[in-house]
Length: 478
Figure 1 (cartoon, rainbow, N blue to C red):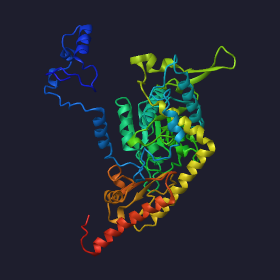
Figure 2: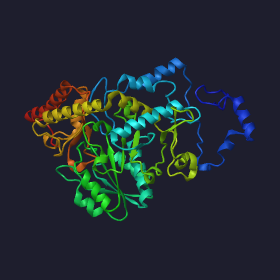
Figure 3: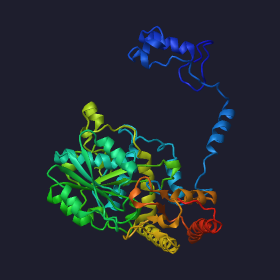
Figure 4: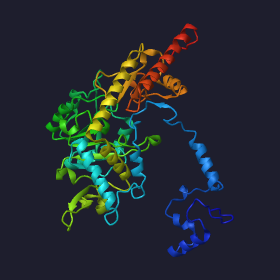
């Protein structure tokens, strides 16, 4: 509200002078400033806030659309970015269902009014449990990073231990979230990887395992795209120290790759974004946690779990919370972890996606992705001085391309690609400097042979340009 003329702002609630005066009388305060008496004086903002004049609805829409139009989206540009947010096809029915008024909220709902949403989320949990070969799946968390961090805290409570081992190939952003969630109770210790294959170094893992290890966490496929083939050995080593095995997984891979339960996982987590969610400029993330039906583990879930039960009417069933007393809704400040607004809507969306594709569809999806990524690696690897993939392991949809010996940096190559209407791979030179000039590319079912060929030819043009510059004597040395 403008203090000079006491004019209400149409987009700032409760700025009508009469409404403010009534609210102040109700709580026994004389001025708005009294509401902030508990904030130290040195933290008060003394200047006049620069709140612009309110625009009309049309003017505001035009202004905001002008800002949004500065973005370049994946409909305009060919996209090969992944690294935690992937460009998959979203069936129209996913959007149709999740935009329905009775579902359109992040909340999981309450038992007195949301039986339909409860059932939808129960169906999602059942489908997801079948996909990951587990018994119990939670109402979704915010994203993979939170799901992994929560899984690690669960393992610490179960074992009473304060260390977790993670691979050095983990996403640096995901690791930051995990460390934040674990601090100050749990220490995160990184395990080396094999230089040629990227696989976890089992010798280093064994040396770092101890009686204080709560869990061993690894990802399959890894953040760098390769399939970790030593799952059973990793799990066996963890269990020899009575530690819990946690596996982070991309669910779109489980039509062709064995679920983590088959190589010893006690807890499985990951992101639902590949299952019917748009990239949304980095949004659309939603994490899941899955375990066996073991009360010792289930009672450590902080998230809500929905179950099915018979009603007093024979043949009818109801849906509701399982072990509600373990959540922060019941325990409040004594809760294991605060659970508020999550991403239940994306759980419903994933349920729609999984019910649409079914087992055969998930197999076809995974097979198509692997075939296309193998083709892309083969084509890129045929470019002189380019290595694809950098690691001698099987890859799913992402792979590391090494440009170190081309004379171009990843930054230069990505700029050239962008100038030609292509989002290139993610630059790994800062996250993993030991790999040199490497880039993480992502291929999914949406990429055609022509798309991949265009990527390859554009990179070839970029690298050819450096040779022309050298011949003309104008290329500066790096």
